[in-house]
Image (tube, rainbow, N blue to C red; front, side):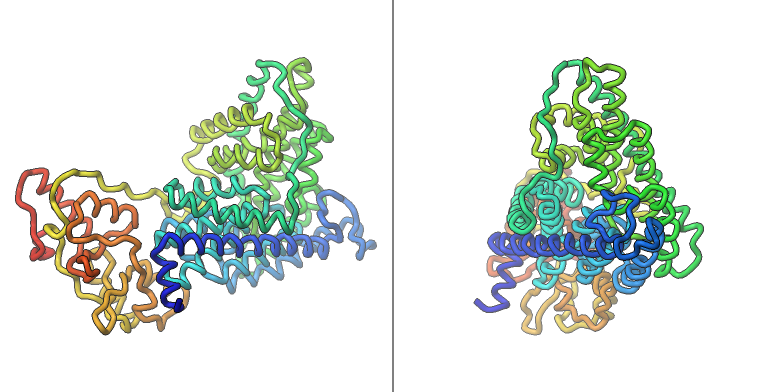
Length: 590
């Protein structure tokens, strides 16, 4: 099969999309393995330990004369390396990554610059290895999503499929990194796509499974945390879990507010070049690490100690507040890393502290401290991200402990509810709303059953764009179109697809100023035929998230054009019992 036929199969057939999903899963798993290796390598380089949070306060083995004071310099040196890398090569790699992916899916048709994967992996590994108090989930989501987007764009798949491939990459990254295939799937569906279509769900599952198999083969198959056997001994203990859920929901919202408040403070204070900001801000972060070295990096050893009940309530509260500030400061100075792991850390401190207090006040009722720590982890994440399904599943997969599910679900639902009451935004959507971006999806067209066919209401095909038209010519043509979408025709007159204003914007953003119309054309996954009903046309317009589509005959020749305005007018006319327009109607008539 020729390359062009392979590309066509990938763009249009279910088998092609399945193959692409598996390929994205494998690529994301490979990057996840590389990313974890980079984090470990840079952590060893900067601190002399595999995870310095577990050896808090120790000296660097290669710099014994500095003692624990080396932690002031580690974030500075790391910032000098990743600051210019992010600023000059992929600025969207700054921060926690997930909002950028959500924006790409909802507003850019799934388009993510190809260099993001490499820059994000290197920058986040340097940031975490150099003491940045952030997680690895945000980076791997953005890395996997960028891989899916790049593969889809190379093969010129339609936007609706490109979004699915982006979600496949996100799910695969989570699955391989945390050995949590189910959590990867629901993270992608709840937060990235926010859409549970059967086809998208199936492809995301396959990608996640492929990544998980590869990840387990390389990284092993062990749970993230090991808990002792747990059972609810007394029904009244559910009241304690419910109270913890309410507290955790509030703490999740507070974490969100603190994160962006400190980021605003950093924006206000800093007046120098952005590429230097992480290094200079690293001095402040280093001083914080000097006082509280448990904040170095992701902090999984500290989280494990808290769940094991090794800290006092006062120290747990100090660690909770310290993580909020350290993570917010890392992001505020321009660091690159996720907020998922910090939310788990904060939740573990809250839950363990709550469990310790419950044992003191009600020793005959309260269960193991570790159970409260685990429930706090899921509930704080749910309060911050408002993704309850993901929170339940990922905590189950990270621990392998099923007996905790019932109290975990109760606490997570309450945390999500209190979060809704306290704030309209999540830790991810607030970043976008502050930029004036809304993720609200357009409402689908209402179904109106009737005998009217598309050929009766379609309009003439607008002036097409030739395949060799320049970017400037395409932009000019689109500026005069009603809906920012035009057909692209080959020199032979064959229909190649459509070009949109979004496609022109993406070409400009990627620096492809010499791009021709053919390279910007995308094939719509479904076409409208002349004998289709208005119901089918409405479904196609809504499903493909486009404002207009070509109408084709049985031999796939373009015979007309259908947009939202013509469809609404036809339905209004049909509802009033008036004659519909016909295929010879002009745009002004409809």
